[in-house]
Length: 419
Ligand SMILES: Nc1ncnc2c1ncn2[C@@H]1O[C@H](COP(=O)(O)OP(=O)(O)O)[C@@H](O)[C@H]1O
Ligand SMILES: [Mg+2]
Image 1 (cartoon, rainbow, N blue to C red):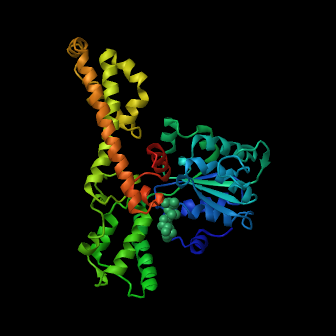
Image 2: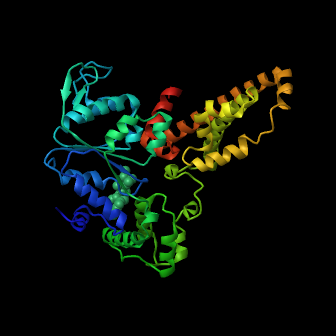
Image 3: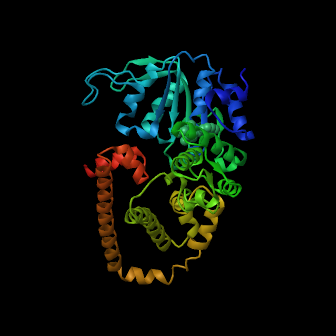
């Protein structure tokens, strides 16, 4: 069996932290088997090397390895991409097409961002995992394939299961073995090492002397939050290598490249959206508005429930998922706290109810305003999407990245607005 060090060298993996070594060791151990593996970790931590290691060290290495980014394929075509389709099965299907599961027979498929798979595709995937069977889209002929699946996700799958967007049975089937890659900030000893490696690579690439960090700059580097992990570190090393005249980098010079929201302070912006790049503050505000609007509607629903039904325990029980959505479902304690502070301490409804039930018109008025607001927000969203698509010559991938949404969500919106 190849050693962890040898594998790191072969696959260009830098780092020496225990957690990284353990993840690689796990990959080496499971490689010769056909066990399904789920690779988890934030965006940019290096998940993509794991399925490559597994494939190369397996008896499948002479067959195909196909990496599929499930989040980037529109919902309407993903079944056909994965499982193929019959000629004439939908408009535009002029030829019978083989899907990845047919092409990769005997090999490995890496399903990146597997949490983004639509539920219908999840059903097909479960079947293929359970007995190797699948149907082409538009066909009733059962086909067999022998594919090893390695999946990856940066999403909290338990939340997705809770929300009903991911099948629990599929999750357990995919994650027979879980390989977790920790965020860069938890691999302190690797941060400077990685920077030096990237700086040396970029010096070679751009034929310039290698940049070096001052001691104070190293401290800044270590304290940074690195919400984009190794991808972000590599990107910053590249910018500095190209742009800085003085090849010894001071703490101040380094700080100029680091986003201010990325310090060790609690992050203001959700990490999953950190890659979006809004070109104006106005657009960011609209985005915040959409999110707030949705929260507000949920809260209105909940308040109405509370006013109608005096029993807060019942309301709490009947609206569990709504409450979780508003107060976040990743932290039980926060949720409990928020609930106690904000919802349950609403003054008893006795004073409010008579006033409202005496003036039903007030309610009507509120409903109308809500509709109008929603409409104009939709206009703004439409405008935002249009402009972003224009800026990127209709390239959905770039527009989605700019808007901070998945390509599939953008595709759905384009359809919704008939763009
Ligand atoms: N340990 C590492 N050593 C060197 N480069 C790495 C390492 N981990 C990740 N990278 C680089 O960082 C970038 C992001 O890695 P990737 O596997 O795409 O992350 P993820 O799939 O987790 O978002 C890639 O350019 C990759 O080569
Ligand atoms: Mg990736």
